[in-house]
Image (tube, rainbow, N blue to C red):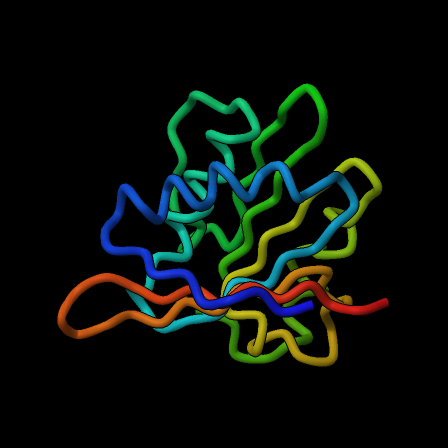
Amino acid sequence: MTGPAVQLIDEAATVAHGRAFAKRLTAGQIVYLEGALGAGKTTWVKGLLSGLGYAGVVTSPTFTLVECYTLPQLTLCHFDLYRLQDPQELEMIGFRDYLSPTALCCIEWPQRGVGALPRADWVLEFRHHEQGGRTLCCSRQKV
């Protein structure tokens, strides 16, 4: 199922969408976050975490490759694969260890891990507009 494109006029709208989208996600799912640098992927994850009840600081995993947030109902693992040179590097960071029925995995730059990543349950595509704002297209992947 592909939903209509959503216009996100600013950072607050991006956070609000992530917060609302939290109701659609459960532990064990994988979400691909696609889009250029600065398109709002990490900002959306901040909203998602807020919607899941997390009140702490959310940092970008650009340099650490993964940041995990433990919540009562699940652990959210936020990956940023931008710096990956080869999908096989996922083995070196122990990617499979993060996959579990109690984890929700959000993966930025999934195209860098093609062939080594599991299939996504959701694909969110962020498009940044030069005049400001973003367009977000969400699709639920068929099993």
